[in-house]
Image (cartoon, rainbow, N blue to C red; front, side, top):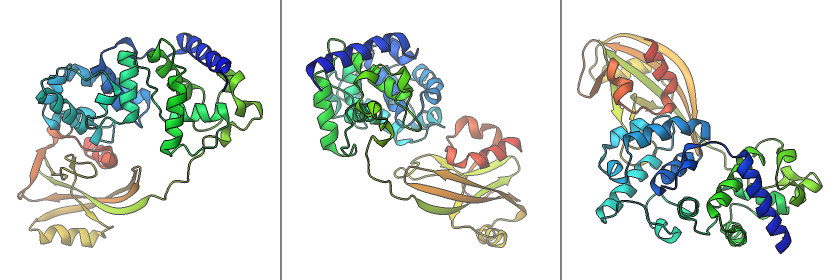
Length: 347
């Protein structure tokens, strides 16, 4: 790309952004804390889904100190439905580290931000450029898709070398308003240069500069290796009810869905007879057992294929028994179990 083309790229991009940018709450602030919360929430999550969570989360934890001292269960409850719960735990871990160091806000530079838990290269650059006008491009999938299409670049976008190349190139193009440049490039990727299906080239401010548009090869870019097939895990989920109480289980503090609450479950698909015997062996007097609908939940690296049973038992034994009216108000149950949560809500 020539210097003249780079200048035109930036000029057209920023002019388009001023006209077409979405009215989003995190664009009305330069507070690094609020921008950080939005960036973490927006990771692998649609803007429309994030909006209500963002407002609610900042209302509950308006400052770094509030987040640092909050109970983890409350943080996870407010995060419920957003998925990737490690993001929420890392938010608090980061806040606690900063408060321990005597700080009341996030550091300003990308270099310092990268030292914090849960803040990677993209997030550090986004915070530094948007909150503090540092000339450091935030390179994510949206940006790589736009740039590889504009330049007809068949480099593997999963390679660090490709990301470094675009970080260096775009740093020279950010001009005097890095915050707008960062958000404008992401906005083009989100609204115009779409990841699935045909991009909306007639609405694109970069159309005249786009090499792949000229020969209609837009869908050939970006180039990345094929994903590995997801691992499939079979599970049997149990809704165990005694009077007005539901049996819950807290997941381990590390690993998938760490520290969240779940309905008891077992590996594999148990028959009705096997399920009855499993609970009877643990000393429960079973009044009834009813088969529930099957369900599937897809994580980034695996799929849960679930069947379920609802059991009514005579009396409670040791365990976390929760009254139905407080179940969804006070406990964070992952959306992986949504099918079974919905059954309880209707009961």
